Length: 228
Image (cartoon, rainbow, N blue to C red):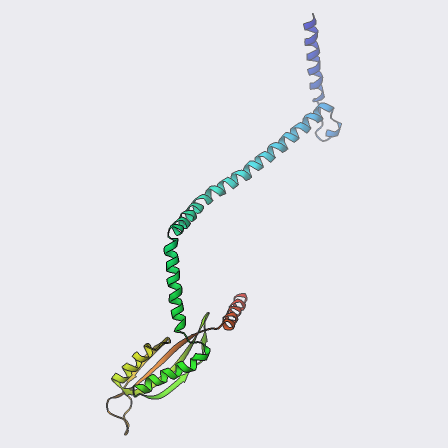
């Protein structure tokens, strides 16, 4: 008899609960009974939690995929640095050799104060071979990043072997001088011209390194040009 009363009470409770969910107006949730309001609140909270969890999982998955894509790059970088570390003594030796070579090249480039002496050396190299200078005209310097290039227009006349020796002497100067646009021709005959003489026209280019102020000025000019 007691068991039957309990079943009746439980059934009545479920019936009362179901009755609260009947005929709910979705446009007026504020007028719902307590249980539907509580159920709606729990549902909304659960949906928000699930959405947040899915969003967090999505971000985590995106980060994981990015990390997987980055792994091969990092591994290659590690292997490259490992090889460098293994070869570090040899690389240091090569670096020292390159620095020594660069220093030697810098010594072959005159500074601004030594340019006049170098021009005199080129002139003396021609005179020492018995050549006659018909033209010796230094041009305007062309500024580069770390050095300046100075062209010199030359025209000399003399015997073939003397002209060849002059070109060799210029190449063997302690400073770097290069000859460009060489043209050796037979000049028009004159009364005083010695038989067998030739005329050589060329552009000699010599180089000098820029001092600190000039390098800074070149960098400023390059930066200004890049902005434009």
